[in-house]
Length: 460
Ligand code: SAH
Ligand code: F3S
Image 1 (cartoon, helix red, strand yellow):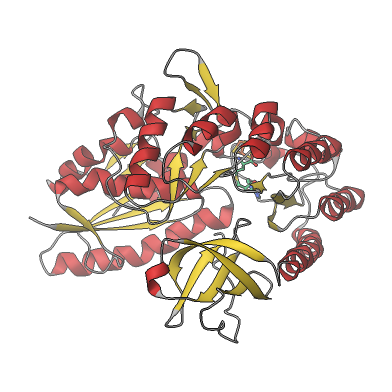
Image 2 (cartoon, rainbow, N blue to C red):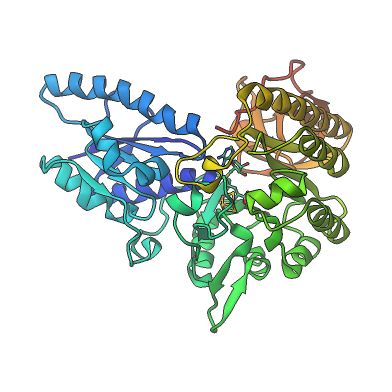
């Protein structure tokens, strides 16, 4: 019997990828993916634990799903409710205490066990919690990618993190670093291209520390893997995220100069510009070390641009420390960045450090940092006007006759082009800019719409 599944994804791109893979696991069981939970037989929340707010959202959502589930049960039908992802991993059994109507709690390393868990839940065998880090590698037990992700696809090559930044839950929720073997990555990349991908973004919590088993023995690091993916016929663009500054090795930096398909844009989280804060964060790079990496990247690929993540209000952060962060931002010039107030995460070393920064101070510092970052982003966007940029059109625009694509720098570019251009890469003349996006036109086609669309969707 055909059944439906609704998967709601929170947080990072790795969760987006994982949600697609869960859908792949469920497809052979007859589950069709639907956009709304209302009439779904199975609802999966794929959760994020990175900051307190992200984790709390899950319980709010569970509240409304509880009502949906009992309304459905009153009509004699069943709804299986599963919580996956990092909140599930972190809370485990505790989640059932707080939300006893949940049927399945499963961590990110156990998605290949989903069919059995669902079958048990369907038979009413009681709630199940699977949050171990199983000895079998989940990638060996997941089916091949079957559904198209469209022109721009994600491919997880590395999972987990051994860096233990003192603020971060990832090493606890995602477990130890693991790199997929080269062959399995290349096979998946070929499949994605066959399914219509022109752009592949390689994912990993620490993607630039990739070291996968090579076909002829030994290991390949990320630079070499990117070189091999670039050889696949039909690939136009390669990206990778997220990178740890101290793991930017020579071969990877050289790849930025040598591989034309590797986009001239890199997300390289700095977190802070103060050495004292970076040390307490256990980041293993200094502010000057970060500047040197950027200089080397620019030497290899002069048109490269950098984006970053920042945390303000880390324990002990002084006025001087935040000034150092602002100085780094001014000197490097980021074209885009995510910035957050430090959020204490239970079980991480920084949560119990002395000198926690009061919230109003965090807010004031965040506002100053974001104002500077927004000005840099706006200035870069404005500097693109008049240039011709290759744009990969990957989705429909909000207005009829409009498509949205991405520039090499990930800027959304809105243009009036025929729908048939969806999935194609075209040279676009940039005609306008806003805080977060660009407008463009293709010569010979109608001029762009006059009004700039609002904000691109924000990182949640
Ligand atoms: N692997 C990446 C980070 C992944 S987490 C790296 O090497 O930096 C994504 C971002 O969330 C981080 O870059 C950090 O800026 C932010 N973040 C993580 N833990 C946080 C916390 N406890 N409070 C606030 N922001 C946090
Ligand atoms: Fe988190 Fe640091 Fe790893 S930010 S994901 S512990 S590199």
